[in-house]
Length: 405
Image 1: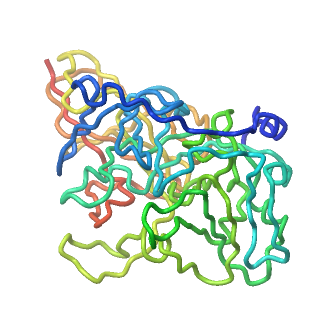
Image 2 (image 1 turned 90 degrees about the vertical axis):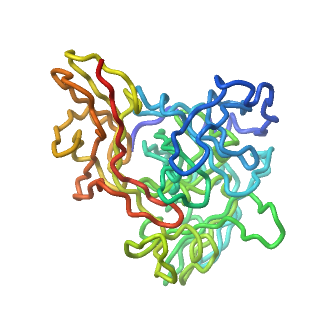
């Protein structure tokens, strides 16, 4: 936990109506300068950087309604915090374009001693204001790099970001209703609604022991600013170390469950094979996507960049340990590896961390080099991706080639 400048008082004083203006469509895809090539192996790679969404800088537009915006890799080249205007956006269903904080209520019910309906002020005063720095990453980050190609949003590696999240502990909010004996899970729903009749509402749940952790939050702040409507104003769940599918936005309902969760997005979706499979496999057992594995990326250079022959080469990037603190990062090539120097631990166990390595002399091309992260629990990035039909939880070593001249 870290200190915070975004206090409860500031939240209540500043909360009003959040609205999303229509994005600007001018110049959408008009020229190559408004496009980014994600270098996806299985399909079209070019993505527009327009239309511009309110409160956002240049983003990779994967979809407009509901918005899917990917962070360009250039945003990860400095520091560990992803600015709010560059943080990726992912909505499963249509989000409201206006939310009035004064009218907003969070219903807490289910296996509790007393069902309650909480105002924003009730939430904010449920316990002490705390902050945690944590990576927020889509379970499908990097899906577009899967071979063979899989269905779903064809993300590059920018469906993630690291921010300082501020709010109150979820367990303090649950205490307002009182958790009943025999409770097993806590389920969340937001204000987003399905686009088609009969489609399932987006509902997610976590085990009770996770919900009671000190770092699992009902958050209203992101990098010392109130959440924007794109990021879930006025409240969202924050589960450090877990994929963002559990970080429900525009929080409206908290339900304590005494049994397992049979809702669609837990029992049927956001699941992956229990064991490695081949692309032609059928009828295999699955397990839910939960915690994140470690990852590391080179951000100082891109695939195909030219480096100076005979000169030193400095490579830099970001890494994180997933559901545990980062332990080490190694630069790896074909049959060799070099330990990288980790930057200071500025954000704690769930945050990005910088790394750097200096190669004394460029003697020729660097074919297929990458970086490999390991966390303190011994989890390490694999050389080969364990293919799955949804492209979930990608953490293979991402490799690039540098040309010497």
